[in-house]
Length: 517
Image 1 (cartoon, rainbow, N blue to C red):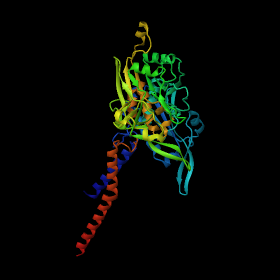
Image 2 (image 1 turned 90 degrees about the vertical axis):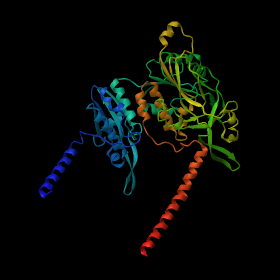
Image 3 (image 1 turned 60 degrees about the horizontal axis):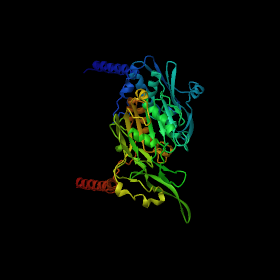
Image 4 (image 1 turned 120 degrees about the horizontal axis):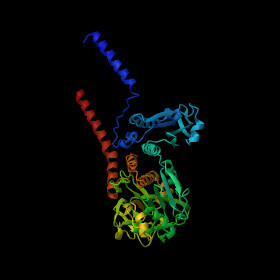
């Protein structure tokens, strides 16, 4: 190759590079090598353009200070760009800094509020006020995501909101707090907040009030001792008309405001109608070796001290205990349960029952004497030998359910519509107790997936199921296998690796001596 040919080849290569750079704004792609394709949108999201008749505008309001300091805003913008790239022009993406665009007032009126973050500087850290929220607009409708600081559920949040705007439907959800001593905005505040952030329009329904048939799903929190026949009649009619319900119900009542005294629930009818639908909530308590920690105060001669114990009444349900074939528990992360009751499935004709998750094989029951005080730990295993084994802790049922009340022939023909139910033998797992061992992420993820499945939006459930957040470091549930793994890890890191380094050094020394000779 002569000098002129080399010059021509270099010029052509430069031209190809420049042209490729110029079309990168029009041709967009990414390589996602993660196991779960965590940074690539799913087929459901890629095909949204088939439902969109007009243009959807997604505006990401993010402060330049945040974008220049942390990588997450760039990853969020990349994911939204992927929506636009697959939309065939139906989705437009815009990114704006509220301060630079002089839109702070308008952005805050949308509900996107400022947050303060630490920004590293040469002299240390300074505090900066930043924004990170998303506005989705379609025709005269809009949806707002007030806080976006993570990719964990971003695709789920975007796709569910875009679909709701395009279809002009509300993601309506009813909530009944069945226990008279609890409040939605108090004991269930975390759940209430997460449902709002997930885009649901919530309606708090007082026990006994009519339940609108337009609700996509209903959550019933507790109520074994407070929901009587008149109140349960409304729930039964909602189910008979095709309504879908999540029941979080206790078979054992624990006084968390006192000394954790426990007793069997004095059922006013809720447990009976659940048995009629095909799931028996036993008035017993499940204990498991895969337990959470409980910190409590105890009195000693020197005063009051804090103690932390492994508390088998608080179960850490493992990810491998979930039913991987069910949409709600596909890629199950596990969840935390508090004084849970076991379930037994006895579905009537026309109803299909499926297990959602179970305890480990190392669980046992308390069926007679309910010992719950952490100071009486020596009595926890009184019934271990007789009751040891895996127990059902959560289940789903679907089909045409028999009414728990008398129905006239005319009503029976009108009310026989297929429904879906989910039953968990614990109310507290949906309460603020979920944050005591930092398990709120797992519990809330399950609850949102359950509500989506009850709303018959299974492809949206699939999006949430494909997320790949970090799991706890407790996958080995067998105590002997866990101890063996820990022993191997300690031996390998403190003996094998140092010994290998020493032997390698000795080998290098001998090799150098031989070379010198």
